[in-house]
Image (cartoon, rainbow, N blue to C red):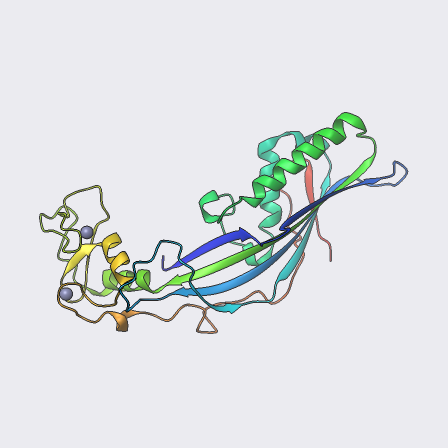
Amino acid sequence: MAVETWIRTAPGTAIRFNVLALGEERAGLSSVHLRCTVTLEHATRRLRGSGLVLPDRVRPEFLLQQQPSTSDEVRDLRDPSVLLRPDDVLRAVLDMLASAPVLRGLDLSDESAWDGEHAPRRVAAWLREQGSRWLASCPERRCRFEVDARLRVTRVFSEPRAVLRRCVEVAMQTVEPGSEEECRICLDEFRDGGKSGPVNLPCSHAYHAHCMLTWLDRGAICPTCRHDLAGMVAPAPWVAPTAWAAPTTASSSTATARRPGLRARGRR
Ligand SMILES: [Zn+2]
Ligand SMILES: [Zn+2]
């Protein structure tokens, strides 16, 4: 994939928590409210012409930052004991977060997609802690658990990865993974199974994919014959307006909860 997605909590007070004790006299159920504000950024990691070797998550060039969008999710606690079940709480938090338009389709449970703190885990831990305190003391009183999270999603289009992908699509793949030929960047044979497979460039020179990725951060030519690769870069998907459908409104979800005890309810 030429597009990487990083998710992180916004700097500063990224997540705020609040418990509201509502009176016994008020009808209705206790509930969990999750308000999520997401800022979406689009960035590009460019092919470099300099001799700089860049570390992995180098600060990319930011092309575009969208206005933050906010979504509100409310779940009634039909079965308050759900708060005592760690897996169910985490699943519910992930489900609530996933209803934010910008986060839809992302695997929020994958901790490696998060840059730093895994926000869903922190929110789930807080809900469990507060929930067990509440259930131990006065479960007959209605409670509202409020979470306000600010997240930042960065979609980074990697020109080096786009070039490699294009090479796989268009170049004749003459060097096979088990080949005795060697990668002219690291000088190891391709049959060394511990490394990434060979990628053939249109000039027919082949390199390990990861060796080539590092190389493309330094320059956009074949290390052996100086064949120019810069012309193989496709534009970032969000440059073409039709290719990237940006969320237009903050919306509240009407998704139905899949977990017992936490029932989704839409709110405007
Ligand atoms: Zn190599
Ligand atoms: Zn070449």
